[in-house]
Amino acid sequence: MENITISPTKKSFGIICNGEKGTIDITGISYPENAIEFFNPVLDWVKQFIENKNMPLLIRFKVNYYNTSSSKYLFKMLEILERYYNKGNEVEVKWSNSEGEEDMLESWREMMDEFKLPYNIEMD
Image (cartoon, rainbow, N blue to C red; front, side):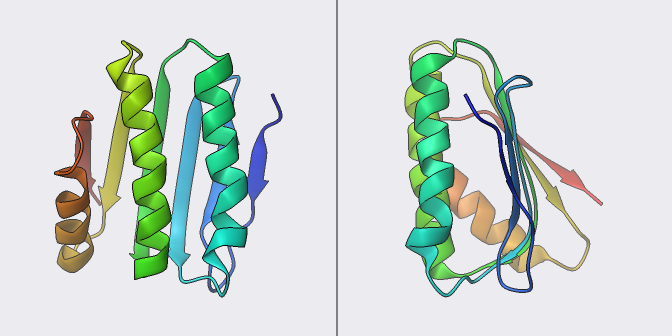
């Protein structure tokens, strides 16, 4: 399974998916011009991971902003991870929040309320 590294831009997240370590790191901001094109490789990687691996997965978010179309794909990714978790696999979600980013934190909590995934919030 190939790892994925997507460098951050002014309009899109930096994303590192590491199958050997069982980690996904998502950083920065996201309002890409073509959300489908940007997120589909990541969703495909997550699907491959849960089909081919039987190990814990840690997903870390250090996000400053995401738009509605990005939230749609984050939601899809969390749906996939919840299925993996519901099959008895360990999934941990970490959200790092900077002081002054209460709106993002509230948006994140609303999204996570839709899932039965363990998560924690770290304040920077």
